[in-house]
Image: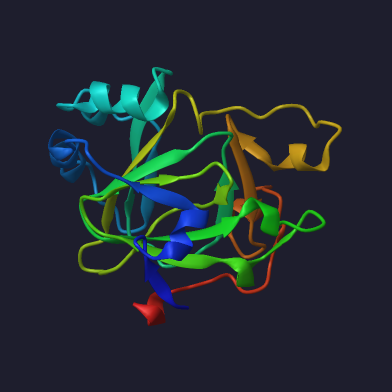
Length: 210
């Protein structure tokens, strides 16, 4: 798989680089969060929420709406799933990391072919917005020795426990948590746990592309 930079014009279909904000305090707090051997996601981390400059940044990114600063840290090279929210997500890493992304309008007849997925490298210290129309999931590392520490900024309570009763629309079955619609690959642990297995094609692994 070709891994492009977020400065590549192709990234404009998925998100944008966000500049002008001082993220030093958040970077320092993020570097102190745990780094597991696999991946770990925490929706709201007090150390990030209370970091120097966090309140001003969150208010600016979400226009005054309640927000949460959490993290996804660890080591990963596989796609496994894609998800979307009803809003943008913002990411920032203490190390370079890679995002595997697809477009919502690539979903056809309730399925998405993983051949549509693109890979983008985000340099350390660069804040990016991933649009609501961009399907995404856990970051991938660029260096297995370093792993990744990645800020995940979202509206408050996103990705927290919420499993509604089945709805009348087929995509209601994708709602896996609060404000989290999940498309799983059949090989993933999420599919084995009951997530909708609607990704077709290869479960992408970029280990040999790094």
